[in-house]
Length: 193
Image (cartoon, rainbow, N blue to C red; front, side, top):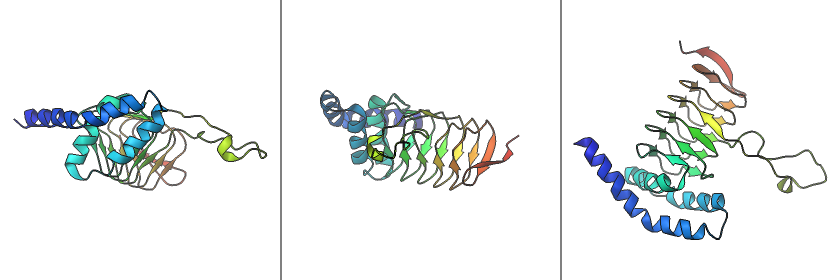
């Protein structure tokens, strides 16, 4: 019975998101898709509570590259790229800032987690050109299945499956499967085996 109720809620909130979806796809013909997606994300992030999560998922299921209906996206969480993927059973805590990434199933992201779109979003080698005009490259960051990322962590590199990233850690290099890491820059403390 609980599963049926969940499916009905997902369907209901997809219908409630329909007016926003229509606007999104109409405006998408005129504006840059990622900028438009980020704007809608800012608006949707302000809807509080569990119902807000259902509403966000109802919208993101149709606008992200992949968003499983059985995820939780908490209040204040912002997304910047429609190419983002979120796997089944994933929980994203409040006040997160999620860039271009693929988050596998059953991940836990604490409050205030930032996943950047790689380490090369901004070029800064040319001293004669303003930083804002130097461009950069977005990289899709991969977060492995069943990984826990603690509050306030910043992730700029791939993280393997079944990892634990300590609160406040700054991940600048790829993390192998089963690693427990912490610090700035994040270092391997031990492995979960």
